[in-house]
Length: 174
Image 1 (tube, rainbow, N blue to C red):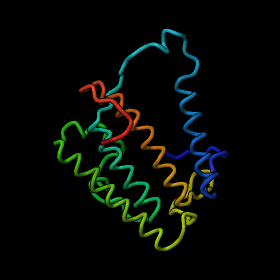
Image 2 (cartoon, helix red, strand yellow):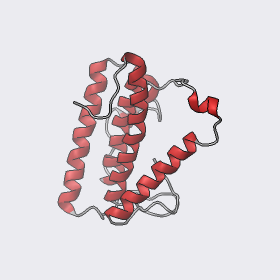
Image 3 (tube, rainbow, N blue to C red):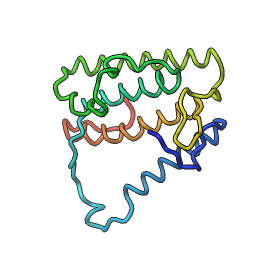
Image 4 (cartoon, helix red, strand yellow):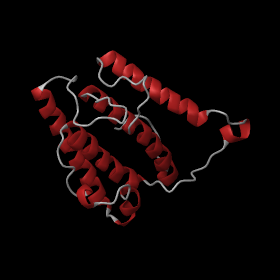
């Protein structure tokens, strides 16, 4: 996710960072729901090729991209170093479930270690190792806020997909 909206706080303290993230999510939600008539607001559909397996693989990629590459300045690592951009969505269809779960779980473990290492070296205000097209460099705080947003967005997708697959609904994992 690379939002170069000038209202997005990329190098501020916790409250401005979190509030600008919340406002970005609110703007996105309003945009997704906006301008529809009553029939479209009542419609139920899942006209998408997105799958839960694709979400697992995509979020494993995003973990590596944001925390290894953009936070730590390290290589993205396998399998992403040889993958075609965006291929995680389609290639997940041929992966075994245990491979998808293991890939995502390993990515999360790696990300946690990278955040811990970064925090051992400095605080949440330390800059990442990349610059947005508008010249601003997000700090660790912004990177974590973007990951929260990424998960918020895709957890919503997963909620819809999972309900369609087997009826599982709810907000809090057991």
